[in-house]
Picture 1: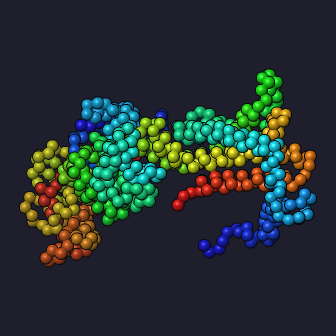
Picture 2: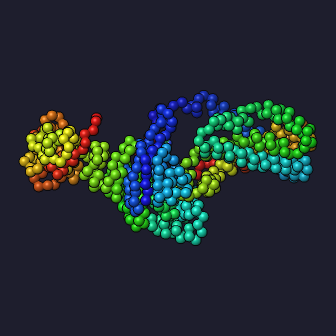
Picture 3: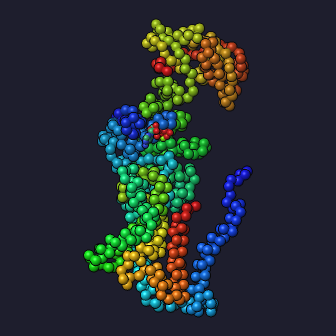
Length: 353
Length: 267
Ligand SMILES: Nc1ncnc2c1ncn2[C@@H]1O[C@H](COP(=O)(O)OP(=O)(O)OP(=O)(O)O)[C@@H](O)[C@H]1O
Ligand SMILES: [Mg+2]
């Protein structure tokens, strides 16, 4: 439905030019909850502004329903935005805000009134219809912004960190509500966040961005289990990285006493293992077995993080669930056997630096 | 909060000086207004409270004519100045920086920097020629001159408001299918309205109050309220002048007060 083809955006000219987006390409399908996730300054807002039409791309095409809209002004794109600071019109009431787009399109009064009522019902704000938008709480403003952007039935709804101004509890509520709204309306959402947990719980697919490039596009589960590179692996969840080698069909970790069969081209690789998969015991079948010393135990409520170091100084973090029978299997300062189960290992190409 | 920085209130003699300044500012005005209600004709000799001089002033045809001229002039000049100032403020804040923007800023604010008497003389030279050439001697010259020197006063509050306005509101309007004109009419203009009105009122008062330029440019027989007062003052000093001055003061205070109320931040 929406195709981004080699979208590039540069700000400034000459030596001071900043390339905010490098050749970004991907497709979004109808009804998808698509998330742009990445650290601050990676170009998420810039990409959203290109899709909304607030900014023209330097090069590339933006094809919506078969038509290139890269240079169509924002008021002629069937795409609406929920702004980070809401950007509600302070001189208008809640109802007038929600009806604004329909008014601008010159729809009949009856239709506007009807749509406004329906939208305010949808976000449960009917009782505040006549309030001025400045007289609302943050959460209420958020809902008005949502209703206002949904009222003209856009093909795609763009949301730029819409929940970042809310406190933790309200944020969780709105996450559920947003997801419900998206499923009820069947609308396509492009959602921007730098919060990985928010991205993982809400999205159908996530595009991880870094340095103005798309690093990987995948479902939340795939992104977590099979990150394409070190950047993605490090950004989503916590991870251990270890340098290893593949040779003659075996995975060799220099610190380990055992090797594992592997289907990977020979050469150096980066081995990735999530802390929750590290087993604090030796002699496991199909695992790499090592010896490590316990540096620190950090208590986290439901689990404890065990910080370890190997003989050559490499560090490793294991996560152990609390409240299991027998308590923690180790104490600070102890030297213990550690296993990395073969099915929990993920190999990444070794990167420079 | 421990030890306060420099506090002018602690300065020896500061209070005395402040009181003296306020006395010089306001006492004469109080005396003027009080005198306007004096029944008698001799100044400084109280003969009882009355509206006698106000009645007299309103029957004075020359005064009424001058007042009418002043009000028409101030209304027209303030209107032209406000429209120009609004467009200028939009051009200098709502467009990407363009070449000569600084020059426009200076040009607009020129009347604040140039001594009024210099401007008046410069205008006189040109307008005298035009008058001679065209034979037209109506209010037009004053309207144009007043409009010009009122622009910066109308421009200031409008520009301040525009600079403080959240640009994402206009972006949001465009996102919600508003054309540029629709967005201006429904979003920018309503948010700007109080500042436009305040600018209009300031310009109105500045025009109403002007003596130097009006006196230089007026055609024979033409008088605005201030030039009329000036003329009367030279001829005969009666308490009627106090009544007229008090009326002028009242209009100014009302309008400036109104504009202050409008620009005051809400909530
Ligand atoms: N108008 C602009 N002019 C110049 N550079 C810009 C402009 N807008 C964005 N940039 C630059 O482009 C890069 C990407 O910015 P962008 O706002 O898209 O980041 P982001 O991913 O949304 O970050 P955040 O999570 O902090 O909102 C940044 O390096 C930023 O400095
Ligand atoms: Mg951003």
